Image (cartoon, rainbow, N blue to C red):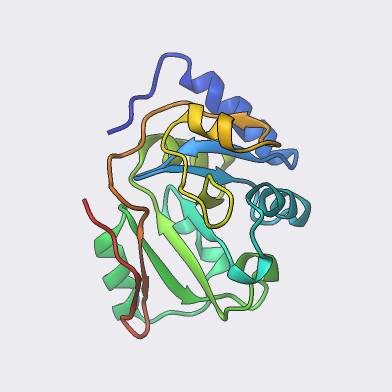
Length: 192
């Protein structure tokens, strides 16, 4: 799993400052490097989408260190749904859940659900704690291309990122599974 180096506390503080000031960061996740920003900042999300060359209609994933960081974006869910998702977290499972009424449209795209995950990756979780919020998390690549798996690949493939947080990914072969919590439909499977 990922190593947090001796300089990581400074890296994390600096990354959080950048996020709070509307910047876009890259960081390791369970399988690939991710791009992240403040989910409530429409300009930051627009910049992130421009870097990826991704349509806003597709929607984005939010990651968090704890479920409480995701609660503002999630609509009402039953106790049984909560128990089902709680069993998989922290971990590499992204759940599609009903979005809260005030969830920004730029996060969900054309969908009526929000994609959320409590990450098990120590650096990604530490970033969420340093930011004191959930983060947008989408693979570090141009839409349709292979995602970056290390910081050098991020630097080579993408322009316009304000900070790269260095570290190793969690070793999964593919990005997180995506499952619709209400229907049980697997949107994207993952392998270890």
